[in-house]
Each structure stands twice: as C-alpha cells, then as structure tokens.
Image (tube, rainbow, N blue to C red; front, side, top):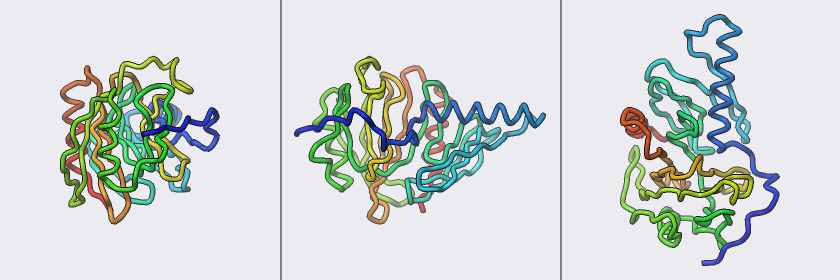
Amino acid sequence: MTVAPTPSVRSGRSARHAIRALAIAAVAAITIAACSSGTADEPIAASSQEPNGSTATSLVTSGSERAAGSFGDVPVTFTVPDGWTNIGWAVVKGDPAFGLFFMEVGNTYTDSCPSVELDPPVGPTVDDLASVWRDLPAFDATVPTDVTVDGFAGKQVEFTVPDYDERDCAYGQFMLLRNPDDADGYWAQAPNQHHQLRILDVNGTRVVIGATWYPDTSAQDRADIDEILRSIQIG
C-alpha cells in the first residue's frame, strides 16, 4: 500500500470535525449567553454553521433528550444524556473531548505522524474501510465484525491511537478520517484515545459512527456513550 503526502497547507479543510476546539467554543458560547441573559440555570442553545449551509444546535443538556444531527446529507437523531454537548455531527464531553461523531468517509490516513492519506484512496464499500485498518500496524485494530444500527448493516472495528507527540504531526493533528469532498476531516483528540467505529451503508452512502473514550474515562461516561448508541435512529 502506498501513501501520498498530506498537503502542507490544508486551506480547503474546515474545522467541522475539530471536536476539541468546537466543543470548547460551544460551551463558552453557552456560558456567555447564560450570564448575559441572567438565566444561568437554564440550558442555552448556541448555533454553529455547517459547511453545507445547515445549522447544527450546540446544547449542553440538563436531562436526557432527543436531538438531531447528520452524517453530511444523512439525518440522524439520538438521545443526549445530561451534561453532554450536541454539535449536530458530534455529541461530546470533556477536554480533550470524547463521545460520538457522525461522518461520511472518503479516505483514511497512515498510523503515524505526520499523517498522510492512503494513495490510492480506500475503496468505496463498508468492507474496504473496515479492512484497511489491518494494514496499519500501529493501531493494532480488531478484526472487523458484523454490526447493525437502526436496521442498517455494517462492520465494527476498534483501535487505540498511539501515544504520539503532537509536535511530530502537521498542525499537531493526528489525522484519522477524511470526508469524500476533501473539505473536512477528523483527527484524534489526544494520544491513547480509543475508537470504536461502526461503518454502515445507508442507502448507498458509507457513513461512520465513531465512539471514543480514554483509559481514564469514567464508567458513567462510558454508560452514557452506550445510551447514545442504543438511541440512534437514521434517516
């Protein structure tokens, strides 16, 4: 398998999947709004504009509730537990962030920094993306297994990001996944972040539900992640 260097300037890459930065910004916006309105005890929604023009609601919840998001053009709904932030394409908590993200995937990267895209790109099917992790030895990924989410079949694979040094990565980002249109990407939020990817075919569109956590993530937060996963409805 050959790889192509990641461009030195990612001018076309938006920060849509920079979960760590957007989660902090969302919480900050909510805090400012609450203080200025004098209603700090009530959840305040803040909006972030998505690249495709849709608006995702960022909300720190005060109790489990249904919320909406999307994998690009594919809508999804889910339950957001108390204390989590919904950004539409992700439900996150903590700093560095962990939780769930939703995205379409066009390609992946090597398992080292600086990250470089696979060339040729990973094939278009669920099996193509699930199996590629076996060729990236540093991740020591699990063998893909069958999984179903809301009636949509796919594959599940798990891996843990290496204990990398951000100074070795382009812009400090350990890249993992790229969207089909080259506009967006997802990178690890910190070393040793565990990823559980559910790769699905939704009416011909390959999407990924990524659940992430760290070795010290609490049992309650892990249970919350499981709650969100069980609640997902697609379409």
